[in-house]
Each structure stands twice: as structure tokens, then as C-alpha cells.
Length: 189
Image (tube, rainbow, N blue to C red; front, side, top):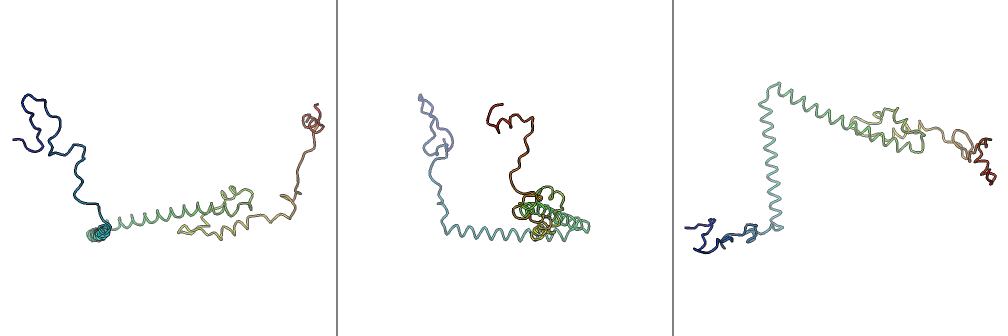
């Protein structure tokens, strides 16, 4: 007797059948569509509510498990757990301070743009931690005050840097500058 899923025997004298029996679906997965229709909008709300309830239940169970584990800990295990928590908190605080220092550097560069000649040299010599709190917050008012203190007094109007008058600077022609001399005369030399 031939059951479902067993190959059928061809009639005597005929070639073996390479097609599956008509009761079996094709091997490619094509066949009848699934019996359940796709979720409808009202089904979505129900599924979402059920998921939220499961997440709450899981969270409650994890908290209970943590409480039971804490109750069964020895003093040494409790001290170790506290030390781990303290180290994790200190590491997070250190990361906030590092980030705050890098933000302070960029804020200082921004505030000093156009006011200080060599901002990189100043940034390299200042401790940027003085502009950051322990929480990593940057004190922008302190940065602005520091830049204003470090910036030289504004140059008088119409004057160049360091008291030199503004204008084009040309050096006096030298005797061995034959190319410059020829260019000024307009004739080949």
C-alpha cells in the first residue's frame, strides 16, 4: 500500500514518474496560501498590549530574582557586588569628564577664533578640566571669560598688528636681483 509521502510505482513497462503525486504540494513552497490572514489593525493593538504586559511581567520577575539573589548573598559577595557597582559608576563619571573636556576644547576654539593668534598653543597649555564640572557639563561663560582675559587689547583702528601701520610691504630691491630689476624696467636684462 502506498501512503502519502512515499513514491508511487509506475505501471509496468512505463518510465518512472518524476512528478510528485497530485496530493503533495510542490517542493518550492508554492501551494495554497496560509490559513491565517495577516494581522488587522485591531489585532495589532491587542498584540501590542499583550507584548507590553509580557514585558512588565518579565521585568517584575527579573526584579524578584535579583532580590532573591541579593538575599542569598554572603557578606563578601555583597561587598563585591557593591564594588562592581561603584567601579561602573566611577567609569561612567570618568567618561563624562573626558567627553566634557573634549567639548570644552572645541568651545574654547570657537570662542577664541579671531581673538587669539595661536589657539592650538593656548589649548595645549590650559587644563580644560577647569571648564568642566564632575558631571561633564561645560561652563561656557568661564571659557568666554578666559578667552577675553587672554586676548590682547584690540589694536587701534587703522593700524596693523603689533603697532605697524597697515599697508603693502615691499622690500628694497637688491643689486643681485636681476630678474626683479628687469621686470621693473620692463626690458630684458
